[in-house]
Image (cartoon, rainbow, N blue to C red; front, top):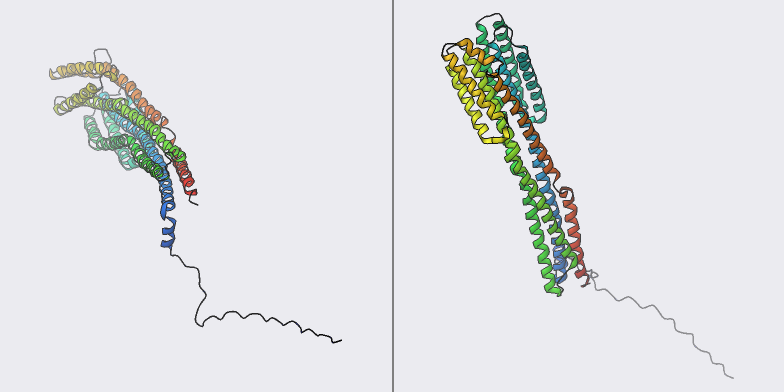
Amino acid sequence: MTQTVSAPPATRLPSAAPAVPTGTQPQQPPHRSPQGVVNVFFHGTPGRLRALLIASAVIAVLFGAAAAQGFRQSDGALQRAEANTAQLVRVQAIHTNLVAANADATNAFLVGGLEPPAQRQHFVDSLATASKLIAEAATAQPADQTVLGQLNTTLLTYNGQIEQARTNNRQGLPIGSQYLKDANATLQNDSLPLLNALVSANEGRVDTEFDGVGGGNVWLIVGGLISLAVLVLTMVWLARRTHRYLNVPIAAGAVLVLLTMVVGGAGLAGASSSAKDTFDGEYSDARVLATARIAAYDAKSNESLTLIARGSGADFEKAWKAAADRVDQQLATIGTGAGNAPSAWEEYKVAHLAIRKADDGGNWDAAVDQAIGTGPKTATAPFTNFDKSSTAKLAEASDAAQAQLADARGSLPPIGWLGLPIGILAALLAAWGLSQRLGEYR
């Protein structure tokens, strides 16, 4: 039997890799430039949706920042107006105390020898109050420090001259009247111009801040209108492209912006209106009363200087008339806001005419008695009534002005802190609404 032998299976050799032509590199995925990536990102309808998402979100956030800035601006203007009003009151009080002290010094000089204790004490208290207010004003407003320092130097000179006048007057020496005139000249030529400059500077600051209270509305309105325009145009574009006429998240963001504009605008308008009323009312009354009191004390000083000059005081009487006219002009603008001050001032002017009649008629002693006496028919009594009434009304007007400015600040909605969060929320709502449509293209 023949045995068949089968051949072993052929061994399969591994196939060789295809040959790569010499000098040829493997292909790499195509590389896109940054501009190409941007073009792809914003290409077609999905790209436009992405562009609208970014634009609406950024504009909404900017609206929130603008709203916050507007409220901070108005609140800051009110705060600065309040502080500058207080500083103006201080400066005017310094002015009033100085002219009041000078009126005491000149009036007491007519007595001869030792002046009345009450009048002397009023002089000392007035100068002490002026010095204290100078220190307070320098701390409250650094911009005034240099001028206030110069003012303090002139006061030291003035006080020294007054003491020289008092010393010589007690000894009956005629040179005392010259020291008194020198002191008055120091006050008029050195101190008061500095005070007038301070008053003018602080009035300018107050006026600027009152005008700036309504400026915050510009930020709110302009930012709100731009944000609303972008959100509305976005919803219109979506409605045309998707035939869905309301995108709830974007509409909610637009409503949020609109409510912020309405509520915030009303708050800013109310604060601005309140500030204007304060400016035209209590603040104006305080300025008028302070100016009237300063002019009245100036008149009182010149009345005494006219008598001290003994027949050669025509220039002082002329200065009295100019000061009295300023008082009349100021009181005429305030009306009933001055209380009893106008009637007391009219009584004082009548008494002054009696003083001039006696002095011009050669009865100098009677004129002096009328000027320094304390009886009801003297010039002292109505002037004291004017001083008390105008002081009370000035304090009332000043306190009311500062209180009303503080109330105006307190009435502002808290959008100064909420503005940016509101803008971010509106941005998130807009992004949410656009993301819903963008997801449909994935």
